[in-house]
Image 1 (spheres, rainbow, N blue to C red):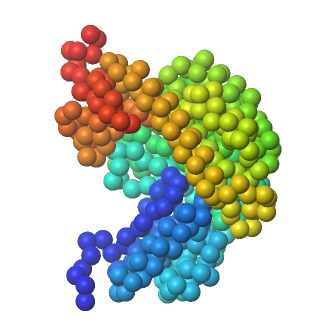
Image 2: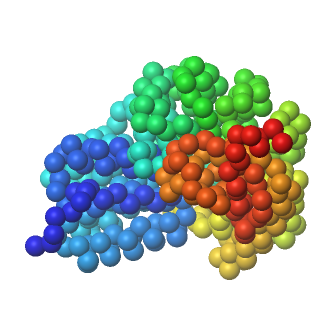
Image 3: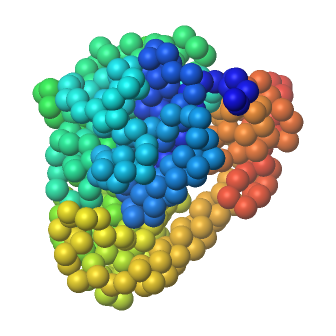
Length: 412
C-alpha cells in the first residue's frame, strides 16, 4: 500500500496554453468525483512527437504506479482513444474533460455541449484563461478539427466570472488562450475585441493574448493591441510559413505580404511590441527557395519569439497525402529557423540593456516577464505576484538580468 498522496489528483499537461488552463478544470472535476489516487495526462497532438510522448508517459505511469487510476484526455486521446484504452488507461474525451462524472467508473466518455471557460490554477502569478476551443478552418496540416471539433466560444459573462476569480486570488495578469483565439465569438455573433473590451472594464492590470490568426485581426482588435496600455506589447501570430505557395498548400488565409504589412503596422503604431510566431519547417513540397522565404521571414517580421517545429504528417489530414520532404530535412530546416530566431532574440535583448521594464514576479520571487514577454531574472528576491520596476543590467542567454529599482531611482 503506498503512502497517502498530498494531492489525490495529479494532472500532467502537454502542449498548448489552453491545455494548461484546462488542466485545472480537470483537477477540480476529478476531486469532485472523489478520486483518491489518479494521474491524468492532458495530451497534445500537434505533432507525431507530441503523441509519442503522451503514449510513453502513459505506459510509464501504468508500469510504475499500478495502484493509481491512469487517465488520458486531450487531443492525442481524441485521435487515438482505442490505442490508449488498449494500453489500460481510462480515456476521457476532450469535451468531457471538465466534468466530474468523467472520472467515475466508465472507461470512455463523450459529451457535446457549449464550451465553458477554463482557468488555470493559483500556482502561477499569471492566469491562463481558455475562452475558445475547436477550429472551423481546414488547414491541410492540422488535426485540430478531428481532435476538438468546430470552433466554440465561452460566453462573455462566463469569461468575466472566471477572470474575477483570478483577480480575487491575486493574479494580476490574465492570458487569453484558445485553439483559434481570433475566431472567438464566431459562433455567437460577437468578436474577440468585444471580449477584450469587457475584460478591460474589470480592475485588471495586465492582459495578454495568445496566438492570433493574422487574417482575423480586425481594426477594433488592432486598435486595442496598439493603444491600450494594459494589453501587453507582445503579439504572437499564427504565421506557419513565409512562402506564398506553401501557405496556399497549407490552406492558410493570409499571404507573406499580409504578415509583413501587419507587423509593420503594429510596430509603427506601438514600436515596443514584440513579435512571436508559429512556424512549420519542412512542409510537404517545400523546396529550398520556399524555405528561404520562411527563413527570411524571421527578419522581415522581426520575430523574437518563435514557436518552431518540423512538420510531421498527421493521419487523416490532406498534407499527409502530399509529397513529403522527409523528416531529416524538416528537422534540419527547423534547426536553421531556431538559430535565426535565437540570433534575432538575443540582439533584441541586447538592445534593452540599461533600460527599465515593469516585471510581474512569479511565485519563486526571482523570475518573471516584462510586458514585452522578455524573460527576466532578478538580482534579489521580490514579493511573488507583485509588479515591480526593474533596470535591465545584462543578458544571460535568452534571459535578462534585472535589478529592482528603488522608488527614488525611477525618475533618474
